[in-house]
Image (cartoon, rainbow, N blue to C red; front, side, top):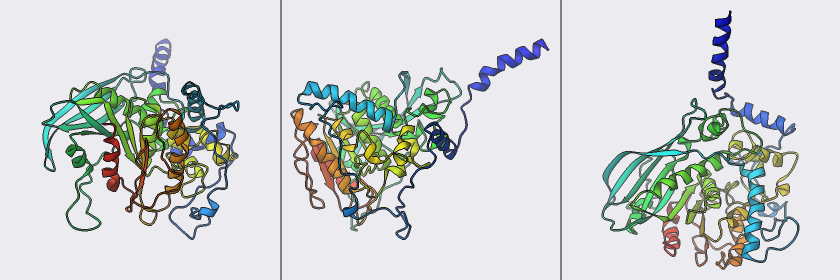
Length: 436
C-alpha cells in the first residue's frame, strides 16, 4: 500500500503538466461565466443580405456611437500638451488596451534559440537571393508538455554589399503560387521582386506555428506555455498579442544576422494579420514602419462604427481568441461606446514611426473591413503625430479610389482590387523609401 501511494504521488506532477483540453465553445462559455455574462449580442452576418443581422452597409446608420475618446486628454481630463505628457498618456492607453482589448502579455521572458535549418541560393524573378529557413525553439522548461517553435524564413539579395532593409510579413505558411493578373496580360512583379528591385530583403514569419488561430488552442502555443497549460484569465493576452510577440522574437534574430539592417525592419500583414501588424507596431518600438492591410475591426477600423465587421463578431466564439476575455463585455451588457479606447489610439501608439494603412474596393473586397472606418482612425491619430513634430495624414476627407495620401508620416491608399495588399505594394515602397 505504501509503495502504491508513493507512486501515485510521484505521478501527480506529470498529470497536471498536461494542457487542459477545451473547445473554443467551452472556453468561450467559461469566460462568460467568469465575467457574469448571460448572453451576447449576435455579430453581423457578412454573407447573407437577407439575414436579419446582415452587416450594416448604410453610412447613415454607421455612427450610432458618435463620441471618440481623445488620445490627447488624460483620464483626469487634463490635456496632453507636450511630448513628455504624451509619454505618460501612452502608459494609460497601453493599460486600457492590455486590460480590455488585447490582453496582458506575461511578465516571464521566454528565451528563443534560433536555428538556421537550411540556407540556399534562389532566383526570384530576375534576382539572385540567399534564403535561410529558420526555427526559433522556445524554452519550454517551465512546462515541457507544451512545445513551441517559431517558423520563419529570411531572403536577402545575394549581391548586397551592405546590410539591407527588410520587410517582415505575417505569412499564412503555404506556397500559394502566383496569382493571375486580374487585368489579363503579363503577371506583374511580385511584392518580393519589388522589394528586391530596391535592394531590400524580406522575411516571412508564420504566426500559427507558435499560436493557433482558434480558441481551442489557447492552452497550447505560447499562450498555453505561459499559463502552463491552464485556461486564460480574463485579462490574459489573446492571439493578436501572441502573434506580435513572435514577430518581436523574429526581430531579435534579425538583429543578429549580418545581412540585415535591423534599424530598418518593417512589419506587414493582411486581414487578421493586418490586425496583428498594427498590434505589433504599437507594442514593439524596434519596428521602423508598418504596412497594415485590410485589417478591419480589431485592427485599424474604428470599433465604434457599426459598419461591416462588429465588436460583437470579435467577441463571438469564432474570433474571441484574438482578444482578451474582458473584450466580451462590450458585446453584452456593455456596448462599443463603453470601450475606453479605439483604433485611432492604437495607431497613435505607433507614433512617431510611420504607418501605412491599405484596403481594397468595397465593390470587390466587400464592405466587411470598413474602408472609411480605417481611414478615419488613421486621420484621428494625426494630432498625436503632429504633437511629436511629425506630419499626420493631412486630410479628414477620404480620398478618391487609388489616390495615395503619403506626404506625411501616416499613409493611406485604397486600391480598386479585392482582399489583398498586392496593388498597394508600389505605394508602400514609395512611402517606406522616405525612411529606408
